[in-house]
Length: 183
Image 1: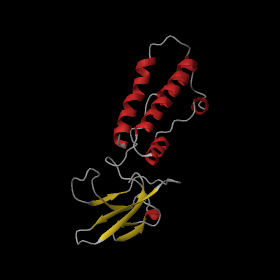
Image 2 (image 1 turned 45 degrees about the vertical axis):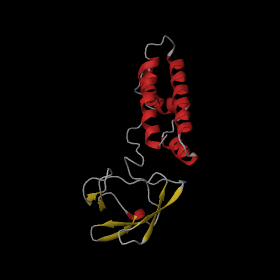
Image 3 (image 1 turned 180 degrees about the vertical axis):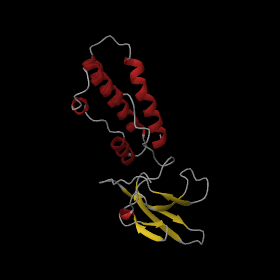
Image 4 (image 1 turned 90 degrees about the vertical axis):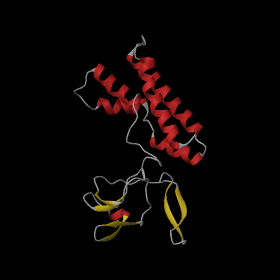
């Protein structure tokens, strides 16, 4: 199974937890425990379906779910929540996935430190790009022409697998891109 297929399957399964437990006649704390166990089992199943162990590790990191204790502790910091509201907040985190998590065919990945990026007026190293900069960007699905777009968010990942991607330019010369595995 490819990464995008595993991600799609995983997202579909996460919402099914609610379908399976919605009407279950059990105390709220047991419902949370059961939901968390199901979500962890689904995550492991998606990771097992991936053909590459490094991809499986990246998948696990991208879709990582905090422990139930951490989820409850984080929600408990909000003193304005009643017990049912606390349950709803934690349960919602368990039964939904982050729809912004994207992978090769739907999003770019991360370039390594030092990668030159085309900006209006020249080049910048990737680590020097800031919100508000104008960078040359092309649609992620390959349609359309590159154009300058304003950066709206930056992020840094640590301890990622780095891959070397070789390709041939139109002039026949070989080139390389060094990026994280999800690029």
